[in-house]
Amino acid sequence: MPSLLEALERKYFAECEFENAHEPELHKRADLPNDFTVTKCGGRMEFSIFIPRLSPLTSVPALLVLNDCDIDSAGDFESIRDKCQRVRELDLAQNKLSDWQEVFNILKHMPRIEFLNLSKNQLGSPIGPLAEAPAINLKSLVLNGTYLDWQCVDTLLQNLPVLQELHLSLNNYTNVLIDAEEAERRLQEDGEAGGQCDCQKEERRITKAHPALKTLHFTGNPVEHWQEICRLGRLFPNLEALVLADCPIRSLQVAESQECDSHKFFPSLKLLNLSSAQLNCWSAIDELAKFQQLQNLRVKHWPLWESLECTEHERRQLLIARLPNVEMLNGGGKIGTDERIDAERAFVRHYMDKPESERPARYEELLKVHGKLDPLVDVSLKPDKRIKVIFNYGEMRESRFVDIYLTVNDLKAKLEKLVNLPPNKMRLFYLDQDYKEFGPEEMRFPNKKLYSYNIQSGDEIIIDAKK
Image 1: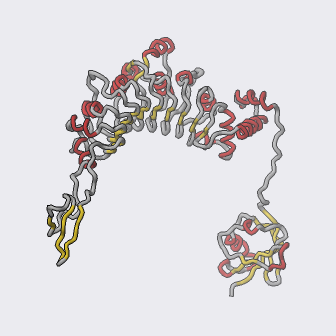
Image 2 (image 1 turned 30 degrees about the horizontal axis):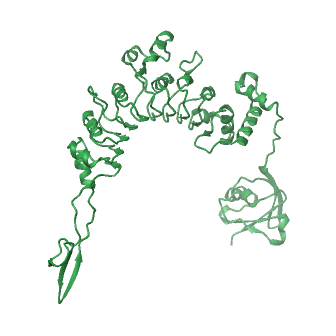
Image 3 (image 1 turned 90 degrees about the horizontal axis):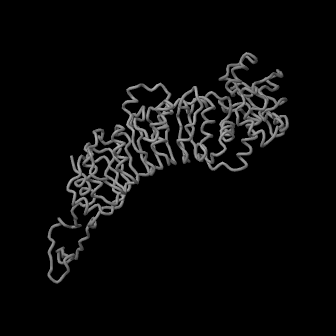
């Protein structure tokens, strides 16, 4: 398997090849520059110019992408330093790195590096003692699909003091087994609910908080209990963005039997993604309303939405009304003043006729703002489902009620008994009573529904037999 140095040399430092290098009968002339040759072609002499296919490089670009190259080691460190002096972003995803010391040596000899992607490398082995921080400039680290244990995560955090963005997605974490040391005393005094077993408490490592981290991606980890997420809040007290998509979280309370104050662990959180969580009650939304700085929220694909008997627009209104601080919801545009006012008024009307026991606390807050509202007049713009149509067949003329949501084929099947004619031998013509002067229109399309003809009571349908 190649080293990092071999992989980048193969990609960026291939030997220069020249056009015409292997063509026959090339002759150099002393009176011409080295880049010129002369070719004999019958009685003529033709000049040829050598053009390099690739210009030689002295160093690789600032963004170095070497993913899926089977890299398992660093290579010669001095050559890496010489060739990678400009590198600020390094993508080594899906390689064969398994020794953390090799990773640290790579970082040590790329002093400007700020972003490193190690996703899907085999880095589950423990990290040995480090004499010094391997890369003090590293600001973003991606460790998706590495299955790194929490002790290794802690070691990395303590040696990367300026790290601002961390990706720990798809690592099969069911628990967060590190916690901030300042939280230890409080946990011992108050206890920690959630049905966690004693062996997990013993394995948990108490460490220092990491205040520099602003963004954490934790997508696709099978965490169900919110107290595990609270530990992330204590570890990263200045967190601004937290992505928990596809985590099967079942509650946003530390314990079902007590009031949750978990929002206190996320005082700076502005973006939260909880899509595909297993949340099935409005109280979860009420908990999110307590996050004072929360501006951008994603809560798609909850079981709660499947159980509601309302349109997507009505659901959005109910969410906006319950979340006074949120400015962007489910990836949509910024919530404007008019949309928020409309949502809050719709929320008041929604709960106005419901029993007091079903009204959330937010209802009373908005009632003070908007007052008691008159119910909206229920105006249905849908056409009547059944209308009276006149059917004509030969000498027969008969009025019947018809379901306008039937297709032309469905109508033929129902008319079979009336006119004793099979559907495949039947032709139908629609005659609008207001436009009789234009004549009847043949109903040619078997799957077209009757309402699409703008059919109304009093209109006629003429039945004719195919010849």
